[in-house]
Image (cartoon, helix red, strand yellow):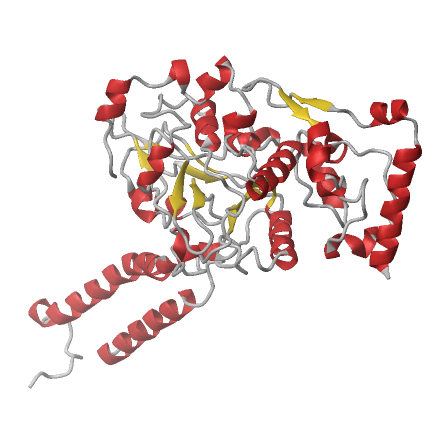
Length: 174
Length: 300
């Protein structure tokens, strides 16, 4: 029964999408999203949203219950079986950039549900890398991020790598 | 008083003192950490071994440059331990099934730290925020804490000829935890392997994750009870002994292994001198006590 209803919802949603004028839809669904929260160590990542829509098709794959077909996750449907699309769908609207700040922890301790929501960085990496691994997409750090000079210094790599002589002579064991 | 009564009295006193210290009279085993104590939940099922936490620790604690870049994966060929140059290290375990599992190692910040108990100059402090910190100015370099630590965590600055001291993770207490901020490794972790929060909340989160994904996790939170509980807690997808944890650890704090013995020390120091002096005087009384009175029993 629910499956039929979910299918109906999904169908209606798709119809609405198709029926809506192309101009307004383009405004709502960006083709490319610039992700810059790690800009201190890496160049910004230009996320090709349009390509991922074509590949994945179902918005809910990444957007959970906020858009696309309704979620099938048994833990979510207890509350969200009839939830419609929400006003905010961007990752950063629910996944905080600073998930462990004092304010975030205080807020977290008050909620009965959703008390283990990932931070923005964790959500991106777990969702993206998890899917990339299943689908055979790139999974190495620098496959998506190009490290900048500060990043090289942070990782003691590239121009900031320890001298090779030390590397060869370094003690192993202990 | 007759000699026999005196001895009986001594025995009774000794027995009472011994019984008095047994049981849980010292108040340990019951301490579950400060109510506002913070912690970190390490979810090994999320770690991909990128070593960003090692890099962040190195920069935050101003540690010397590493031997190899922090993106060098060849370090996984050996099992490493925290040292004076690296307060946290990630090791790789080829656990079966499911491929490699990475495990971050650092000080677990015990509720009842063995290092603290073992330190005779009181260099260590367990702060109300949960961190086990130490004062290098008073450290005399005796390395008792290195032996006491059940996790083999503290490192030692063997490289320093004149002022060798203990070196270990301090939960970024001075620069971050004190101000309510998460440690550098937590902040940098891309996979959110590390969840920072109140220890009590983290235990709930850990249990929820196990309950919601029973196939993903082993039903155990390492550090909830081990050695009296630790501020850093671990979740894993494989048995903990497969990824280098000591699963034979007692739930009692390390201190409880020695508390009975240490409880007897004051008794020995106060009662034994008097007791044996008494024995000595009684045993030698005959030699110089002949002329004092005639009440003593005649000797055969």
